[in-house]
Image (cartoon, rainbow, N blue to C red; front, top):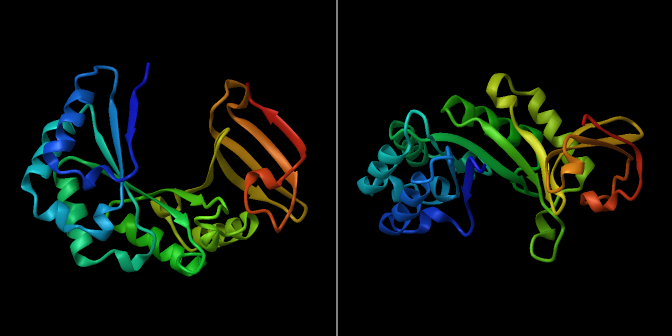
Amino acid sequence: EINNVLLTGGDPMILSTSKLEPIIKQLREIDHVKIIRIGTKVPAFNPFRILNDPSLLEMFRKYSTSEKKIYVMAHFNHPRELTPQAIEGLNALMDAGVTLVNQTPLLKGINDNPDVLAELFSKLSFIGVPPYYVFLCRPTLGNETYSVPVEKGYEIFEKARIRCSGLAKRARLVMSHESGKIEVVGMTEDQIFFKYARAASEDDNARFLAFYRNPAAGWFDDYKEANEEFSLF
């Protein structure tokens, strides 16, 4: 049975509360849906959507219960976005019973720096919004300007995590590939290692792959031949 539902993009919290609440209400009427996740940039770019709408917070209080939580997957990309107003909005969500985590793409020229990324991870964890996923951008026409090569991205990510402690180190570096969510888990002088964090096919569940390194690779598909692979199941 489905126990998690993700509301995502566009941005669900751009909707008025009067339009968002019926969706939440109907999901809460499905007994086996235990977690509702909302992916949103609103806490970063418009915290007043939270601070100036008491009905939104009341909705969260009503539907985020002790046994069935609502998670807000915030999208803070840079520590400068953690303004006093943004932090106030995040605290208001937590006070309303919402559980918060953060996910961000790795963006060239914005947060592709170990110090910046470490500061983001740490500040988020200090205020109760631990990092969840860091996404590598697929180098497509619309976002190629911001994409970071896979291996460079992994180096930046690991250097950032070294600078952190506790829950700030919880982030995982992933790609949302057509075959599933693929985590970059390690690298040696010659090889790079991936694991399916979530697979579209049952055959790929927990599948671990080792490829020879390709510093020019911008995406999983740029690694053509696995040097080694196995699955736990």
